[in-house]
Image (cartoon, rainbow over all chains, first blue to last red; front, side, top):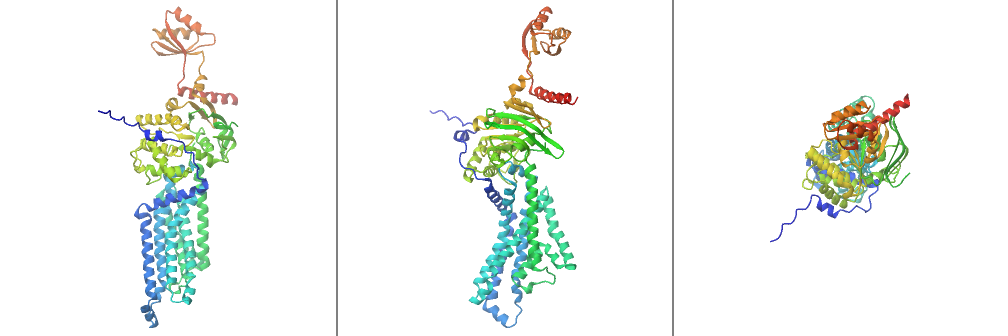
Length: 303
Length: 319
């Protein structure tokens, strides 16, 4: 007969194996990567945050690819030669960007706009800034994570379509005409990604509650810039570029030379580029300043 | 500057506009200290001091924390220090083990090591069974334990605990204080505990730093804090019976007396009355003295005395 083994003490497993960590620690300048990784993992967790908008973007890319294929087919060429109105098919890229933009707006509502405000609301700033994390590490980490998500929508899809369209080229002459599509798709995607990343994050940093941040972003994107753009229609066309959606559409139409999709009112190309760059830059400055203020005040309580 | 100190402050000064939060703070706590109680009324400057020690805010004067200068080595200090805040610091939708892994990564540990130590820290904090649950659903006591685990997951040399027993029921409070008291031995880290609960300080702290109106009024061991009040003139006297009669006799000789029980009085003797004089008075009154010992202050009394002394000095200075 053997005596029953004594139950281990609480925490005994840990205490027996404990040794102070003596390895190298990563320098603070690399901590943004951990922040980015965590944000990406968080965004991927449920269907509603990123998976659904990404699914919409993937379906859009596939549909655009299929339409491009048929437009290049012999049957369509015969239709075109016979004078059938198939030029609307050229506009598929613009319509594709419309869906990408809606998907991106969904991501701003589910991930970007509530992000910084939620961190303030839940006390996460204390969690971050009681560690070696600096304000710039936090800002870079969050911007990078949201930019990757936006880039998957605004850059990856159009880039694949551009490459695919080149692959459909019948001869070298057509190929040489089409190759600028690739860098242009990257420029459009890059500018759109920057604006749709920085703007909601900056607005989020202005609010101290998640719901307030969502309201502010929706008001800015749906109401605020639309009102300014409406004034632009009546007074000065470049003012319309304040609307990120309008600015992105202008880039697509102008850079892909899709006159078929050109509307009656559209800001000039320079205004679209300037608006997206300027709004993104101002947003990053606001975001950094707000987070820096939080980094100074979040640790240690009030007295 | 003494390098071998947990912290060493010389004339640390901080203003927020018109508010003078720290007024030339001077304090030294050496490496022998295990659990340091950081005490002071609201607005005393404790939080500002913690921010200064962690290198989060700029300040005037000289300071060393674990041998590093907070003004230039803030991130390096924070990598070696753990912080358990009073308020909740949870990231939504994360389990305890995810939160602690992330905390360790943000303190510079590689991911694999961070994950192992997250499990270990949660074991230590007594959350081994619940570590995969989302923190949002935890009880107050469990949340306090997660806060402790995330503060020590990266093996800090110094741990700041802000009101660690806040909101806990008596049993959970007892367990938390036990964990805190064990930490210096089991984890080899010193602890700075900011709290309003002086009974907690009395139970686990060996050193106290008392702040008031932006200055450190006392920094030393708990024994030193009580020694300052202990004198031959402040006595606890126990008699066989009729302590009230002894009180009357002593009051008649100018002593301040408080009868604390039927057989005990606390007496502050006037200048002309010695210990021998007390014994003679008792014998003359037919009372049998059993014990006489210097009165030992409670933490609360010692705290209030330090604050009152400082206020008295200020008032005399102003006059």
